[in-house]
Length: 363
Image (cartoon, rainbow, N blue to C red; front, side):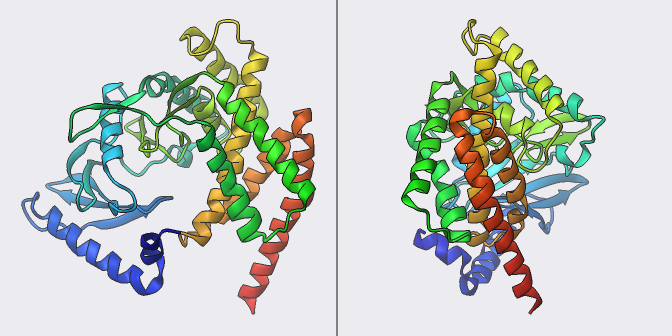
């Protein structure tokens, strides 16, 4: 772990850093308002950023505090400009300070799409969300707000995919579960990961949000707005659709997912984002295995958020990701052994670890 990240999270430094940044944030904000405003913390996210809300003359704004050595704001600003130019509703950057890592943004409200979804309305909302993906896909480069030059999005290449899959092994299997894998188990995992890498690389590439799901879509006055897009890349055509439809935080009936999957298939076919000869069976394989890769990565990231970033709440989302992994991998003969291994080795180990933790808390 880089030394600066350790410093950020060690308790002895965390409060000092947090207080000093909050003081600096107040001083920075009060240059732009007619009277002193007080930022009210509304959330942190799954990175090192924090978000506050301020109000001036009955107008509400969001303030982002993004430590520049950890999460530079330039990618966010560049992507915000590109997404807005593509016709997507995103936070508007009103003023920013790259050196300190502060941004004043338009306020898209507090209503995450996830908070309003029901069995009755989810299909309609998801159709609307899928209908935004052509605009997301059209963003393949971003405009540097400082130099004015355009930069292509990073490529979601083999090294990128393997790095993400490695998070599962490092943080869930080894760090959290402390599993000592046999040679046969390591070989099984590596072969399964190879298949997922090949699947990702085989797909046509489009502009990819990379975290397109119901917590990163906001509802404001009935309109879907897009947030948390700063990690956009150029990658597999099915990635954002499966991220939405097989959400890491909620699971919907397979019949509905299948119907909406077909909608996306027709959408990318008509837009020429996949070859005209691509069958739905081929598309579904891409979709299923892309979702499998994402859930493996997410399970590892949730463990990393707990241990590295002191955000234990995400551990509660691991069982859902593991259930996706078991179920989807079992549909493909080449991945059936991996499904069985996760079911017999990883799922029980995670459950046992949870019981040990609960018992320790009660003592």
